[in-house]
Amino acid sequence: EDQVTQSPEALRLQEGESSSLNCSYTVSGLRGLFWYRQDPGKGPEFLFTLYSAGEEKEKERLKATLTKKESFLHITAPKPEDSATYLCAVQAHYGGSQGNLIFGKGTKLSVKP
Amino acid sequence: DTGVSQDPRHKITKRGQNVTFRCDPISEHNRLYWYRQTLGQGPEFLTYFQNEAQLEKSRLLSDRFSAERPKGSFSTLEIQRTEQGDSAMYLCASSFLQGGEQFFGPGTRLTVL
Image (tube, rainbow over all chains, first blue to last red):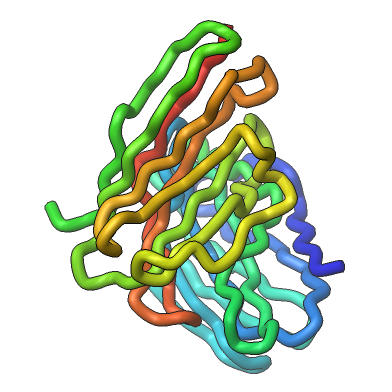
């Protein structure tokens, strides 16, 4: 069964304290891995898509990397406005017809000034 | 703003009543997805459309749930005879390509009393 596990469930950082969030996955044929940011009461906001092992994407203080079994979201020198829940999702190959995302439970990040 | 929109943003209803939600996707997107999210969990796939055709439904989607996408534009999700367990955030997303990024709307928060 396809599955996504994120760790830690919650992470508290001081402003400027860099860290990484982990997303491990099992899927029978990875089409893509996606990172989203979600603020309370809002829909997920798209951050990155990664398609193959070794791929990296960057956006401001965020950098996403992908291996064959997991992905990391590195946060460099975070600011309080980076506080949010970060969701990881995978999209699998199933005969070319399916496109739904399978999400993890997310990591709730709090950055204190 | 040309993002995904959902209406209403909040809905409070009594158990046993029927409710209907609307989603307007990004105009050029041909794929539309419905997800459900409960507190502390990631979004869970319900169903998706390619243009006006409903291509897949999750086992989570009981007979009380029905979705439509007439003319391949906006979509509606109806829940009949609501139960307290239906209380959740209902999210709509759209994408242009089968493997493309999915962009989410703000969600409809349903509370069943």
